[in-house]
Length: 224
Ligand SMILES: [Zn+2]
Image (tube, rainbow, N blue to C red; front, side):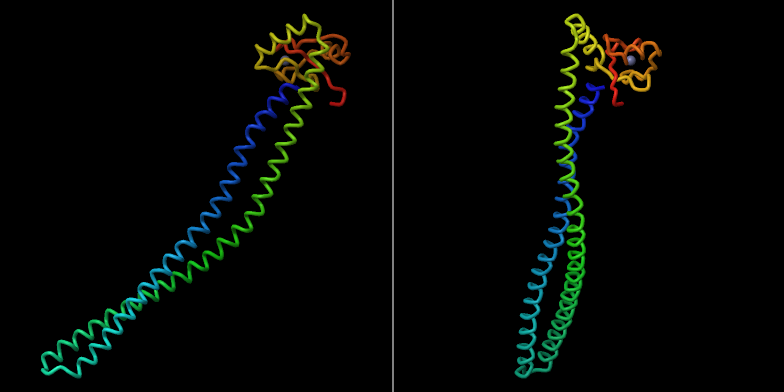
């Protein structure tokens, strides 16, 4: 029982760092999601500024072309220039639509970012709570292990040398568990029922009794 407790606690102890890693991974992925939205917004802002700059230049060019209209000599030249201006205006209005689309996307992303940020903050609280809890449990498990080791050593101390040898042999053969608790007439090492008279002997606690099935050393706890 005690040894089984220790073994199980050791398993828990090994699981906690993994759990912590998992929880910290969750926190990181929340941050990453937020950062990704932010990066995309910045990217679009840059694109918008570039596009707006280009549109400004194009507008200047159209203005100059319109002034040149007043100076051209022939009708043919005039028509050609007019066509050029129309074409430039058409391109410009397409460019303006692109800017509007970018602005809409930025708006949407700003909303997303706000949402992700709020959720991240909410989840962060829960996850940080879980991390704290896992750390506390880890400390508790360490304490339990120390306490059980002590109990185990006390039991071993009470064994005479002949039994100690036996204890070590059993321990080797039985997955490292040589001393087990009997609970409700059941051996907690192999979970087989103990005959009533053997159960009585264990309860008397006068001599070392072995489980008839798995040969582990049986002990009984009054508090159980
Ligand atoms: Zn047994």
